[in-house]
Image 1 (cartoon, rainbow, N blue to C red):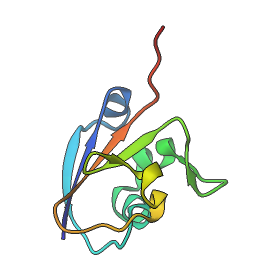
Image 2 (cartoon, rainbow, N blue to C red):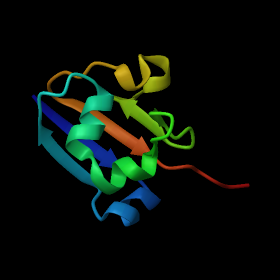
Image 3 (cartoon, rainbow, N blue to C red):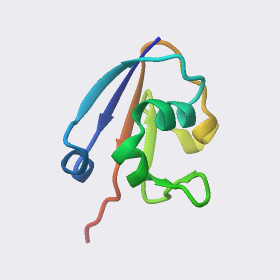
Length: 91
């Protein structure tokens, strides 16, 4: 199945890309992030000591916040779009 990933703002500068498409067999977002995306992006957005997404980051699957789905265990299907947002500041 094909999964597209888009990253935004400062994450783009940190990892050096803004959009990628993958052909995968990952069953959920956690597996996808760990096994496919991995590396620098995974190390930035995950709290590996807890095995959880760092709460400062947001992941949307097809425009829906995964916090309102099944979190990192949200199942993936062909043509899904994962969007990852860094912390937002302002005042």
